[in-house]
Length: 585
Image (cartoon, rainbow, N blue to C red; front, side):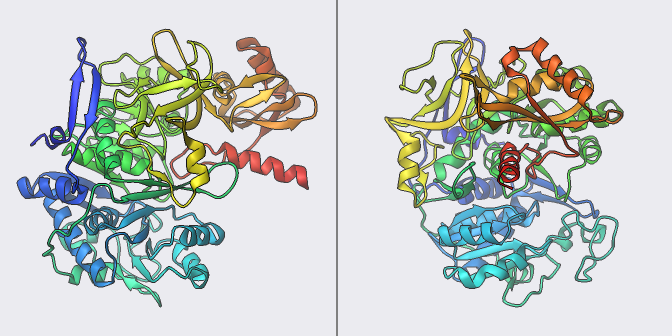
């Protein structure tokens, strides 16, 4: 290990050994592809970069030397198709190993990577292609996203190039020997000779695997700037079209704190698993930037649907050392029964994406001996608040502000809130620190709204205790205002989840002519429990007795499943939208 991270990060620690100050610095021509990935490859070509597998049985162990070779071939191939510096390139690759070839190549070219989910439908995809001026789209042959692209391509004039990637199944053909096109898949493709061997044939599309295998592996560095746009994510809110969040290369280096001081990745001999699809920002949080800057190995499982037992088996089999996933996934693993698996390789567990309930914190620690170490950030930022290594987590608290940023909780007048008072989490941006978004691309109004008076306004609310620990309340648009009270969904959800009948729940607000909004709980029951008026009353009384009575859910809806993202995060906005649709009918 060469401690490459220390070339770009200055750190100071307090008397207890806890990070107290951090700053990021880099030359104006810094490029993650060359100065991190290739730097490691040139010095230690045999250092592990990623272990990858899928339910079909295919497995690969990629070194940094492999990543350099394949990303150079990919850069040559993309260049031959006219992709270059400043071009907008959408990438929809699920958890295929080709994502890492593609991402690194795009960075080397100086193009802008725009990851997206494979679940996009025609309206959403067309909006993204047009609004960002997408020139090239690289997508998986698994599922129907290629057909969705074809359906809207004629209405997206900037889209010049479509590239199709056969990822080897993506968990959609588990237990089968052939995919939908008749290509042999599975364990037979494991090892170096099986990389990128499966073709993908579709009219109007280029075949990525064939093109990359035929491309030269000799690539010469091309001029790029760290200040150039690096990455763009679409971030949806509850109203309006998705925002386009634009980042430069400082964002990649700022995630060193994510990997080093929060996830506690092990550079030599360890292997880190973040359970996230590459279409979402959490993937580069936990599967790319910070981990590789720390010269660490990441683990990727290319599955179609989350199965807690599978993940637990993989932790056991591959001796995963550090793990990060949303609370919902930890809860599902707990319900599966963690005691039935050898998790002794795990040394550190982190969580983010939604608030962590104290009962889950206590349960995971009881069964594994490890606390769940919470953190908070956004698509617009890296970690803003987290429990740093050496801190003692408080169950339910997301930690303290990152020493990389000046973070405050402010009231509506812009004054810092006293301890115990709820306000908006804001970040000082005068001057703008590395990692905070450059802007909402092509949207001056939204940019000005979020970045004003020298602060970036996150739209998330929290309160701080006397020790400086932050406690999450909810999104500004998630907070329920009822009869003059501000009610955070997390508070009510935490109480409900302590009831024996409740498996999962989401709390939202519904319009009420008297109260403004009434509290609604959407609940998935555990096996053996059945919906009914008596259970509704029991749950309402349960909440009244355990928190302020005004917070109890006046409406309870029992459902089979809650709407979630592919990463397991509960989508309260989808519940609100469904309620609004039902009211209109």
